[in-house]
Length: 190
Image 1: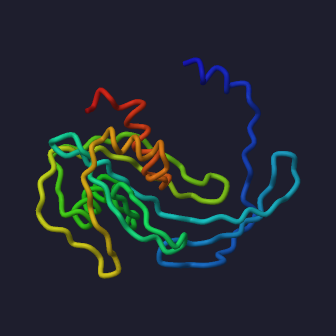
Image 2: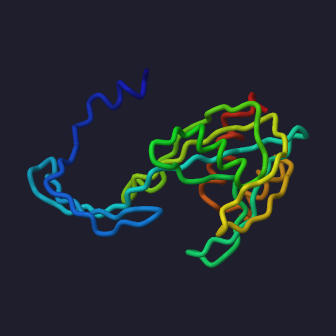
């Protein structure tokens, strides 16, 4: 593999944990502060978010449209158009989480699942990663949303979804990444 040969000559910049402190423990995430030993022997402090990870789903309808969600996100004080996604429960396999989230949020089950890729979101300050899945063979049952979850679903032709990414109407990072990954590398899956 060409890339492996290029990287073989790079130095090891691994940092070693000296101490760790839990700054905050929440329902969604934890915040930690670690003292680390740097490759040159100096010490530094690393503050970061610990997150259990998430599963994101690109649900394709029989007509080729993608099932999206419209919901309000409090931290940014605005509505977003997103692919279905959700946090992993402790020790929950990502596929199980993806299946659970699709049903809870949209009311759909899928007969066919395919893992697409894994993305690490904010590598400088978070452990969160998202596993992306393609879901096909959708059939509606009934959604089972959390009490605090308010959203609407919309089916958008896939080409329109790509255009909405291009013109900024879809600008949620996981949704942009998932749709563009599908466009760039997954055309043979459609």
